[in-house]
Length: 113
Image 1: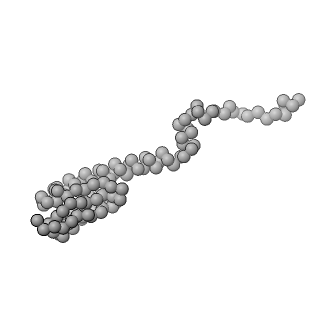
Image 2: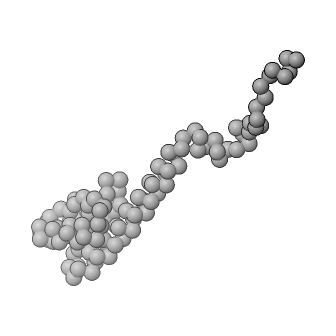
Image 3: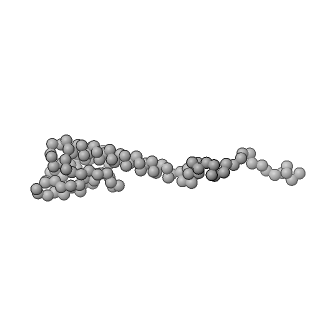
């Protein structure tokens, strides 16, 4: 008679070790999405950096071809030396137009050659 009163589970429970992929998502469902977004952002920054570098080389000012454009955590970073503030501004405007919504940090130094 005591057996009849006992409540039995409807479904068999799956041990945690049998489904490691599901355990990963149960433990931290946002972790995978965060790493995916970071990879996408890195790829987006790298592509933008390559496009900016190609644009700077095609502007017709040989000195802008030596400007470095690197993808960093803060966005695209322009670095190097240019002979005038005009060329510094040209590089920045070109980078901003090509980069779109990506942040551009201008660390170009103006020096006289």
